[in-house]
Length: 213
Ligand SMILES: C[S@@+](CC[C@H](N)C(=O)[O-])C[C@H]1O[C@@H](n2cnc3c(N)ncnc32)[C@H](O)[C@@H]1O
Image 1 (cartoon, rainbow, N blue to C red):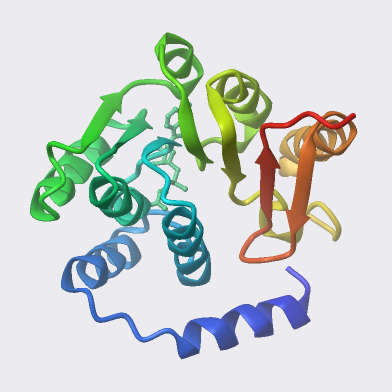
Image 2 (cartoon, rainbow, N blue to C red):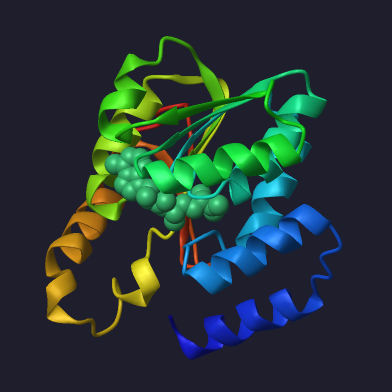
């Protein structure tokens, strides 16, 4: 990440005063057990976005321990809807189920244990918000299958799309394939979709369902 952006993100995070006990508990757990969850400023933006659009039927690819899922699930519940969330790792899936229960969301969340690449294809419904936050090597597949399930005024939110800043600065060579794929993915989104790229958090991509080009 560029130093100026890192400073800006740190500044934003320093201003956010979280008081929700369960959210604080999950943040501490993630830090202690090295579970990747959305950064605080991205969590705030995610919440802002789903709340301001009153999204009801939400899909998430990459549940982890249910941190972003709890944030979005609460909004879906308040709007009389639900969150469908997919996680490939069984231990994290079980932890997420516990957290959803603590949040009182068990009736508003359809948590799926499986590979998002396969599971999204099986979903026979439309979603008005789709949050892609799983393995970056599969972003194009997650996106294309999700896009088919996006409702008319829906939005797809893609996290970590600029992958630690490696898309625009030097990076360890072992990430060559992921960097190439993400660059191709961004070019594809600009060429074919109603897409905006935000230098926020670790890079966020937003897509509206209307194809303009
Ligand atoms: C960045 S974490 C998700 C964090 C979560 N969205 C949050 O902010 O609370 C990515 C998660 O995606 C899961 N994952 C990776 N590849 C996946 C796949 N193909 N299908 C479903 N989940 C996957 C990982 O096990 C990991 O828990």
